[in-house]
Amino acid sequence: MLLSLLPIPEQASTQSVAIDTLFLVFTALVVFFTVLVSVVLTIFAIKYTRGSKADRSNPLDGSLKLEITWSVIPLVLAIGAFSWASYVYFDLVHPPADSMEVTVVGRQWMWKIQHPTGQREINELHVPVGRPVKLTMTSQDVIHSFFIPAFRVKQDVVPGTYSQLWFEATKPGTYHLFCAEYCGTEHSRMIGSVVAMEPQDYEKWLQAGSTNESMVQAGERLFRDKGCSGCHAGNSSVRAPLLNGISGGPVPLDDGTVVPADDLYLRDSILLPKKQVAAGFKPIMPTFQGQLSEEELFQLIAYIKTLE
Image 1 (cartoon, rainbow, N blue to C red):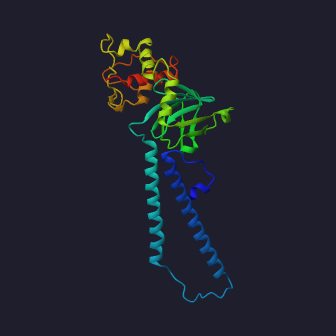
Image 2: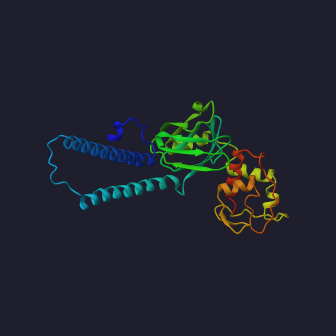
Image 3: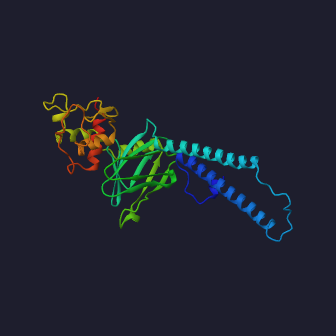
């Protein structure tokens, strides 16, 4: 009830309630202690001002109970606030395993979005209500920031790396999408919309915008056209790491370390093949930097993740 009286965006995701409640409680604590200290300070300043008739005959040298009280209470509140905020934070950065995955490329001055089934959007994102959606994002030029106020989620989008953000819409509607990082002269025009739809309506939208290729199919085509299959297929004559089952697993490197084969590792292996060389192999793979767009990299990675 109190939240509805505040000038804040509507709550339209599962995270928004937790974040707003946390913010409101923190604000109430700050206001409470600020008022308490100010009132006590004012009363004492007036009561014990020079020339007042206050009784000063029995001054206290100290109070162990008082010192313990004003130390323990803030400590308990601080630990409680930290634990609560940490719980909310870890929920924000750990998408559910069954999340629907969507890729986002930021560039001056638009958001380019692609669904797993191949549908593309610019400055608009359609999602189903009641289903977690994970965005894997990168930038084509400068730092951007993907911000949906009604969902209370915001994540920087940085060139040369991948960042993730997830949310679950709770009610249908059209919600503002902003770039929250100054990215150049047209930054203020880098806006869009997130359209949350009932699941049946979302399926109809997908079918209406059906494409010839899903992301995996496009990635498989690129895998052949760019010559990847000539080295990384099982029947290849070139000795190169097999990619079957590599996604998500541990990869031993030639320097003795082990890294997870996440999306960023796969991206770097395509663009910066000498950065992390797999153990037992020589750094002979050529770079594909400048030969693949960010969208094509997403498609290739989507295909590699399906190899078993």
